[in-house]
Image 1: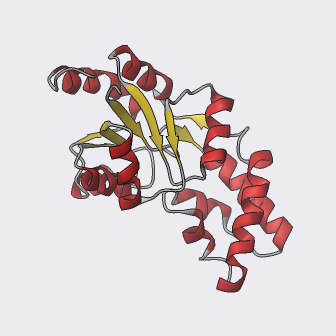
Image 2 (image 1 turned 90 degrees about the vertical axis):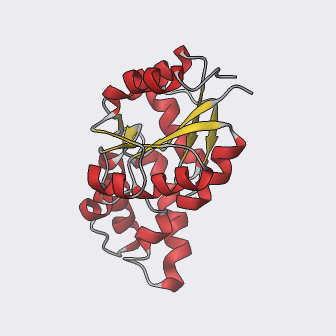
Length: 207
């Protein structure tokens, strides 16, 4: 198995905020429980249950999760767009003979809908994982660097023993990403191909 570059999904490879806002508004309409869609979309990263726990009482939480995920395909996929440089970042990985592995807190089948809609291709996709929980998937799939927008992604990289590459396209600032252990911090993915060529060439063969 050749080595891989791992990527988080939301706010790393895709800007899912427009779609997620729409899905939360649909959830409010469906359940009658108000969710501040703008606020929820501004703090993407943690698992869905964490966000919904701010709005729903514990006894309603699992039903809310199920309802949101049922609404998601019809409301959240079409409005979502790639982040700047996302397609080029994946192309750069493959140009170096590396594999693309996406490890995300989003449920895998919903993540796959985004990839298909946007024409972004992953060699492996692991979903429903967060922070330290991502580390086993990074190790299993031979990830050599992990790219993410959240401090929890840098925790995942550290736990897996690989360098974390932070991109400041999500809710976390460059300083927060560095403080969480990022080996490199980029403003967005447009600078990633040059960085990858720099660090991969000096790291030995890809296989």
